[in-house]
Length: 442
Ligand SMILES: NC(=O)c1ccc[n+]([C@@H]2O[C@H](COP(=O)([O-])OP(=O)(O)OC[C@H]3O[C@@H](n4cnc5c(N)ncnc54)[C@H](O)[C@@H]3O)[C@@H](O)[C@H]2O)c1
Image 1 (cartoon, rainbow, N blue to C red):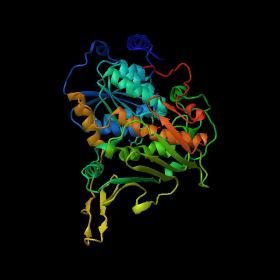
Image 2 (cartoon, rainbow, N blue to C red):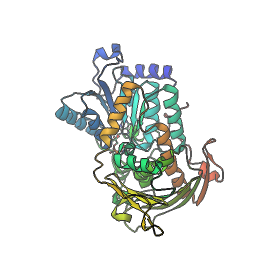
Image 3 (cartoon, protein in one colour):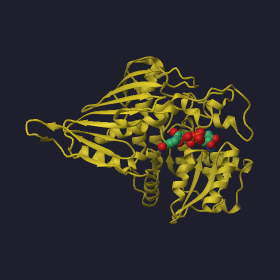
Image 4 (spheres, rainbow, N blue to C red):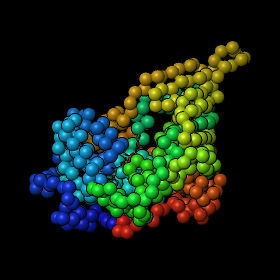
């Protein structure tokens, strides 16, 4: 669609005349002003699973109204509207087309809970419509889209929180402070592991009819046209390159984000050394890899990512986690807590640093959402910026691209947004959008 703001408003105003079949619009909406009220009116775009979880974390705050829900699956839309009514006594308006949601002047902020291939369009249009945005991770499904979104947020001055909620988790926060304070000495390695059964892929299914109530063409949006298949649809789209990046960009992105935090590293990786393959014999449907080992050499330390989908045992008795290895000690951390394991110094018969633990880090979505809500009011910068979302996502996308083109070593030039040693890899930086959708230009 590639619309500037004026054209966007004009276009969506016109389309509102023929509003979708689920829309119920009170006439007062058109005259409403975005008042700097204490209550924040939010809309959710993409309601089925995690988007709705994040909406609930918004609605657990007294200063939030759910003004609208939007989904291309009428069944999901109606179920979630009922859930909101039952749990919170609110009656959100219902939409199928997110552009109509963005036109509503009484909406202050949107939550983007769509599959990854939709994030960029949802996000850029929301920026152009002056909405603040909670966007789920990974920031987008390709490197070029991530870059466009960073620039859109800046250009339109939006308050944006990326759903990398470990930035609001006390175990990760304290671990990073310990490292920054020098308590584990020089940070030398960050070893990450992510082993999850679900990463193996979807239950195989044949192509079949589109379920009643689903606007499948809209669900595909900018992605290539193809027959409907349940295995590529709700939930399991994440295992197919057209819509997601597999276990690495789905879960690994959270962990990469933490590995960059001790030095507040921004941008994509300069070098990516990748092993990516399918080593499991389990039957599943997916495009993405079940096994990856990736090394990112940084100036002062090295990040190593180790992923085995289809198993759930891992180092330190944890199915996922990070070990920050310093020369005085190692911090092992997951969402529940951390343990600092000190090195022993034989020359003084003592430990080089103090052992420490945290075991009750608690839930992170609530505080992450609260931080977003506070920033909407203060116009301060939330804890996880689009730049942080870009850095984490692009680390995962570059490694996935390396696996897809079979190049074990890729060099990435973040300024010029290209790989300097592989033209095949460059072909996967920017997606080809299916008409009528076009990649936004910012
Ligand atoms: N932060 C976290 O811990 C976390 C956890 C899970 C998922 N996620 C992220 O949340 C997002 C959603 O994942 P999910 O598991 O909820 O997926 P899902 O498939 O369960 O739900 C996506 C919903 O979006 C709807 N949708 C698709 N295109 C749409 C469009 N153009 N407009 C409106 N609705 C549309 C679908 O019909 C579906 O209801 C993904 O980006 C995922 O990576 C984040």
